[in-house]
Image 1: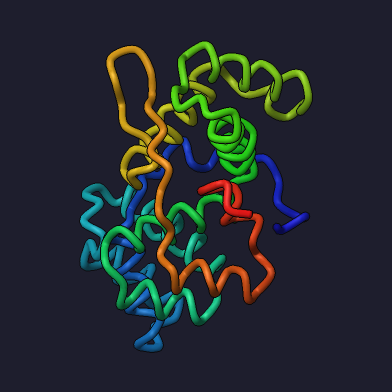
Image 2: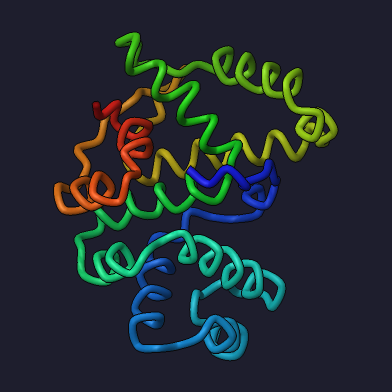
Amino acid sequence: MNNNLKYVATNMTMLFWVNEMITGAKLKKQGKTEKEIRALSQDEDLFQAGSENFRKKAASGVISRLRTLDEFTTELLCNCNIETAKQITIYSILKSDLLFFDFVNELYKEKIILKDYKITDADIAIFINRKQEQIEKIASWRESTIRRLKNNYISYLSEAGFIKKQKNYLEIIKPVIDKTFAEHLKEIGEEIYLEIMTVYI
């Protein structure tokens, strides 16, 4: 885990972007620089983001997540199936957003450990309140910021297949992590992310 990672609210405007991550990884493999990827996003709407402002956000979001991936994982992202690509995208968000890391580690993972496969609004409220008490920066964020982050975190996990939205709760779906991806994380000493995603020990 990156000990220099700070609490930021960047992801309140960022989508999951799994297909965009695949596109970005392939461009990196072709030798495109971050500057060139940004230009393609801006000039050709590479990530189909629509408005000029959102094209910039999409490029920045994808690039920042791709930066967390080593060469092997970037190569895997270019050639894997969509389910593995979703797992790699979750991994990249865990590595670039400390609050999301805490959300999955302290709420999602703990629920699996307790064999309680339901996440309720009350569970999320307790998590957020605890973070606001612990972290001054989070306490300073507007309620609208917290709400948008919460909604996006739920969306990320849902799109990745880690949870399923039910009427009154979120059902946890413990994922089966791709074997090649899992073995690589163990080889590079990042078992912590396996443990967080699937309570791997």
